[in-house]
Length: 426
Image (tube, rainbow, N blue to C red; front, top):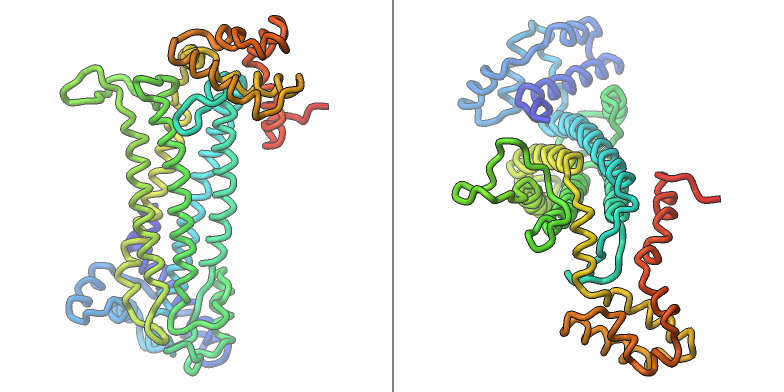
């Protein structure tokens, strides 16, 4: 990813556009084919020269063009024929964004595979499901990871859409009028580069496309933050159900040797905040004066490379976290028992309704028994059995049958089948 956004590669991409434009001009008969072929064979860029020229010229494109023509003879006069700066910069930027997107797509594939493998591993690992941070009803750890997998797959689709959105170029000349660059040439150049054409550009490709791309990267970062935050919560000392990998020799604190902090997940969360900030700058770049100004350029030189680099790093880091994540099924089971069985309250409620009670009648009875179990640290099975309205409708055997964790996860295999990780049940 760093190579994609290096100065060397930027100028190489600019040169690729310039060469394609000269070849297209030759195809239209405006430039001698022999000169176009010389340019394709001989044109070079020298980053040190470009930097030196820019000190004098205060314009990176003209500095680039001077460096290119230094490597050519008389045929160099055809370079940049009829073009304005963003006839080169925008197609070249699109090429680099596509390269970056391909790296991110592979990152997402790696993460998808890692999550799928761990989800299958823990398909039947029972744990407590929580809402509002409180015990709700049991799930499996595999089902939790399956939800992550579904989200990653959606993000793959969003990235593909954003990639398509920026896969366009423009060579429409100053203000986008095509006065010096006919549409036929624009189409030839973009086709040669593997890009679509921005159908009606100004002097630049409209920046809603780039905002879409950066917002998508921020959205992928938000998903990583959600996953990392969940693991951070599961690693809390009071929970202790799963934790990020902690390598031999690693130290969690400069002062407290016992600490095993979730610093990798915290790093992912911090980078997600950076990505969100960049997405705001990308939105601000959409509005330019008239047919263009240059206010978006300075921001883009930071936010586009940095967003790609940050997300590439975060995806790789979180994939390693998933692969090395340590899971504690015994602690999960211990935590399930902390709330004295009140997680079966809905099962009791439904059983009473089936026995003829209205919801309005049954709810306060079950609620009272549940709160009593929590306050007195007594089994919910005991407190609910002491309720006369319950005892008169449910036998001891019927009541005991309701307290079965397997009931809550009996449909989990169907969710895995829906995601293509299990064959559908016959």
